[in-house]
Image (cartoon, rainbow, N blue to C red; front, side, top):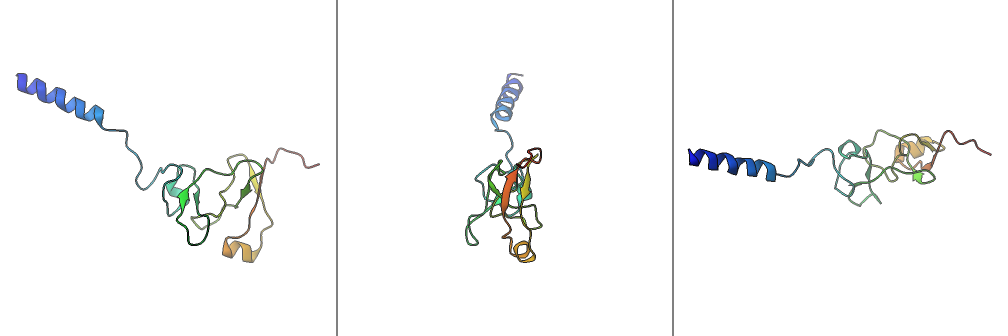
Length: 112
């Protein structure tokens, strides 16, 4: 009887000692390596250059440089936070080369 009680207490301790599950492929935090934006909590897999490793990064805030949403999974500049628009002049070449960048702006702000 004591052995069963000891085993139950021991197993309960092991269960409580295990840290909360952390994403290995999805639900990645800022700074973790990624291949696609869908893997990141922020939905932005960012790289500095064409040869750098991509890492999860926060989405762009108001007045920061941004990339519009596109089919590629990796950005040179993250898309805007929710509620903001990435104002950019789209071109065919920019869309193909992932080089059409803009600035995050609040659509509620009236241009003066």
